[in-house]
Image (cartoon, rainbow, N blue to C red):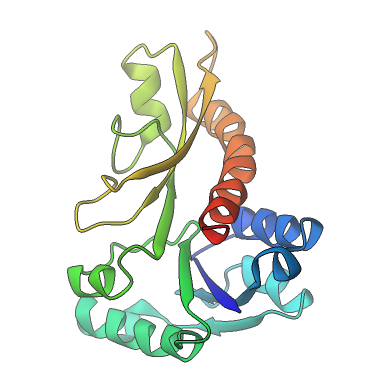
Length: 196
């Protein structure tokens, strides 16, 4: 059995899409994989409610309670590692987890740590991607699933989806259109990783 641990900070819509896809596509029987836990750095993250209702283990680890990023990441790894054994290797999925992870954490889960970013990487790494795409006059925007490496938003690309930038788009309208594609490609990219 492969254990998937999803990290969130808010509503968890990508996590919910992944849970629903895993149930619909029967990842447990097809890939020997299950979404074992959802971890949030915010106690009021709405995605925790969805996970609990689905019977998925949930954990809260408030980053503000730690003096350094390293201390938080060490505690986060201590939460994840019980799900990571030789017979149950873990895949760590960042789904709206709004924390930059330390090099030590990234290295610990190298090749098994994924993220989704709301741009067509390598364009527009970091924040405010939709407004930046509009301001740059882009005709297309989108989202990218990638493996996480030590360089922010630069890991190997697993999957991308493209949406048009419409003449009257705002950052919010473009973000909403991109999000619908995130819900499609992130579960698909994870299923592809699980099939290997």
